[in-house]
Image (tube, rainbow, N blue to C red):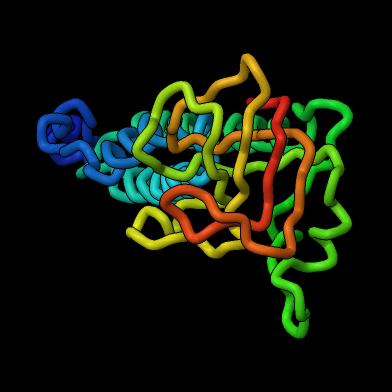
Amino acid sequence: MSTTSEPSSHFSGDVDPAMYEQYRSISSLAVTALLIGFVSLVAILAFPLILISLIGIALGAWAALSVRKNRATQTGFPLAIVGIVLSALSLTAGTGRYIYEEYYNLPPGYEVVAFGLLQKQPGQKLPVPDSALELDGKQVLLRGYVYPHAERKNLTHFVMVPDFDTCCFGGQPALTDMVEVRLAEPLKVDFSYNRRKIGGTLRVHTNLKQIEDLTGVYYELEADFVD
């Protein structure tokens, strides 16, 4: 009479995941997603870097799917999720901060003006557009950057530009891209790469006004507000 023994667990097909843990590697995609998640936090303070947040979310999702698909050989799913959360946090906070600064955190009494309204239009005879002439003598708020100059600290007189695309490569911005700013006492600013909000009375000239080290300007801003 023969007896039938229970099949060995070695042949049962049941696999203890712990037996193979030592052979699984951490997903490089998951690690990269985590690192990008941390880096993306700078987008909270610098909105143009929000692209890093979008890359972090996409890479984190890719890493999470890859780890789940290859769970027998890869680990790192929690790392990918943390990376996604950090990138999503920076995207949300950065976007919220940008909307608040651009549309809500504005001083009363100023007309918000885009540099586009100061640009010469095709077919116009004057060097400044009608949209700029209509702003002459009005209280306006401009957003822009302090043009790099020899003096960098405690500035009360400087030129404001809409961006650094030209001047950072050694050229002079377009004449209608420059606004000469004179700050009222006791206001002062330091040069930086941060965009500023500057408000005051705009003066528009139809003849070029000469200023030191530059060809000249058509616009002056007698500023009494700086942020």
